[in-house]
Length: 404
Image (tube, rainbow, N blue to C red; front, side, top):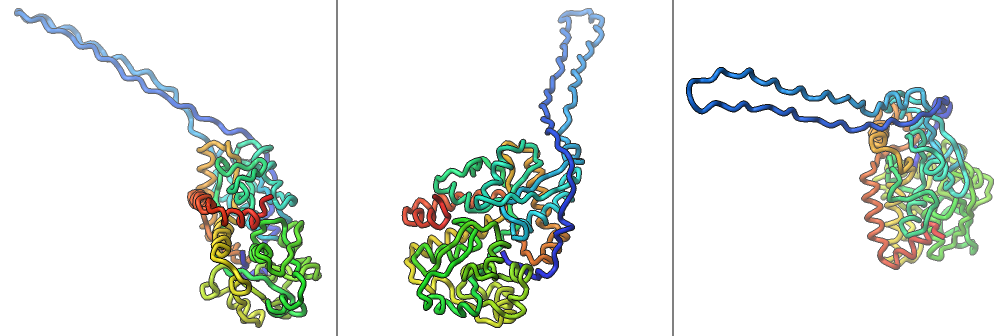
């Protein structure tokens, strides 16, 4: 996603100290017992009998109170780990650290948080660490890439991940923006320049299905002059490869990455967008200002206008975009997390995404915030599953999502 004003970094303030862990108490149900009342019989003939003393009602047994789940005690003095499948400095890492800084204010017991970067396998290593090796005690969460949910949607098993059982907390990155593929001006000033070179332009990505470069992946899929190079550890590594001209085009020329990691690209107007995708620039004032005023360039054409496409291919890209926009940087936790503990987490995550201090810090780091909760994510997955019943869409989606 894009940065808004990314010239300050809060990295040091977002690292937290380490505590210890504990088990979650399981409340037990209590039962109630009704008291029995004795009914006296009356004598039918005079003289009136002497009344019998009224029988006393038997006392109801006293139920032993069962304490509810004590969330305050559960989280107090504990350490919560956020597992990130990419290297430091990128969007996944940044949002993990933002959440790690402000989530404790909304969880009972104010636990400490630590972010652990586990790059490799395109971000897949977090699933074992979070969903298999860690106990379901609410003290480990992860930030997942949507490529793995897409793979599961088409029936390709992602080890340790089951999209039907994993506990989804939500995302704070559900923001539709204008994205673009950028080139250094000394390589190309337009898409026509790229095509005229006669050889595929190299684009860097973490793994097939990388959302940051979905536009490039789509162009390559339909036969355009692009070649994706995989294996980078995350945004910061891809941006560095672009800077040293190891790759020719990159979506990491966007304002969040460029201004924070390589401000010279913008200050010296070294880069230019060659095609775009995502929301219409008319609805994205930040993108329009960045391109026209800060880079001194023109708004580039939509990728649908730079290459010949069928209606089915356009529909394929639209389905993929919807999942990418709404499910990027998705926070998840162990499928066996008790429901009462899970609800506390869901409420805390939603409250954090609306916290004025969180929003201010995100803005300071140039990160746009858009909340999508578990219900919305489940709906998106259901709609995606329905759309992918179309065999043409399904085949293209499999390739675009990096499903092997």
